[in-house]
Length: 477
Image (tube, rainbow, N blue to C red):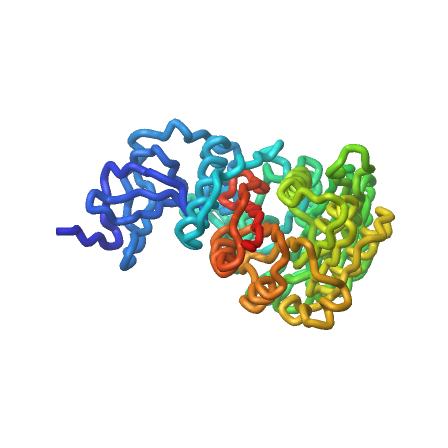
């Protein structure tokens, strides 16, 4: 008879067997029940306490580590386990790669029920720390306190500049050092925090919606250019300008400094009017071309632009897409979900023409700018809802594509887009995904006309469970 575990029960000597979705490890009880455990590593033998009992699985936490996995390592970050951003820092990087590649294969096989070739080797990140070129912090007067801090009799400063605790929109974990971005941006964050303390500036109170200092966004490029964006809760011009002037005096190498007054109920930047206080209002990134005979590409990154968060791995991701496509120079290619046109422009030198389609008009404006910067003339960028764009008139105007590249958001493609792809039936499709579960769903819908010829993972986000997946589909004639 299967034991029914409930909240608070102890499961002794549980052997962790795999790493699963959302960064949690997986084990099975002696009766075969699936147990999800955060911060465990495959190969660990642990005692676990049940924190939630669901119909088909258990959620548990480690209460004692009997035998550590050979893949376990000491995380360098003092915020590990609280921040929630790097859930795999305690696992050796080679083991992370193994489980990421396995997750992509499992999703395509079991969720998509697809016929697969042998996977191409996952492309590892050249840097496992300091790779993140964009990071967003929140100022808060409601700092997250540990149980140990709460138990002291000391009066603790509740001001913080850091990340929201997972699941707690009203609590911010103060960050002293983030290992995922570079040391200079860490210096900028810490300087702003101490300046605010020393000058008695008010921090944002998320419940009362009051306070001057609200958010900090830091962006930088491999060329050494830095962008700082600050959001303020109200327009105290003199205090804002004193802070910005002090920041520029301390860090004169800043390329661009912008700010916004945000009195909304959320921190979204995209509908705010930004003031450029210093610099050109953008930074520029360089990306090596697919063929070394060509000059590197230049991408202008404005404050609201999307750019792949790991600059070096973005090159590897796009290179894999072109390796799969193997262009001859004669192809007409559609690039759906083109964003700011990075993939389209990377590809354009090696095909006849690229048509990029994207919903966000600002992103299309950036794509046009980047095409001009790189003197690329064989691209056309169109703003529109993809599921409504592909009309017979559109195809008549632009032609039947020889290949289509899709790089949708995490939710994958709308069924109408999948049906349009089936009607267009180009000879080849390259599907780039940041969520192999929704990729598997979409590929299953395409499987009536397409076979997967090649697929492989690209690790853009070391020490997290996230991974990119690239698949090449050929039409079954």
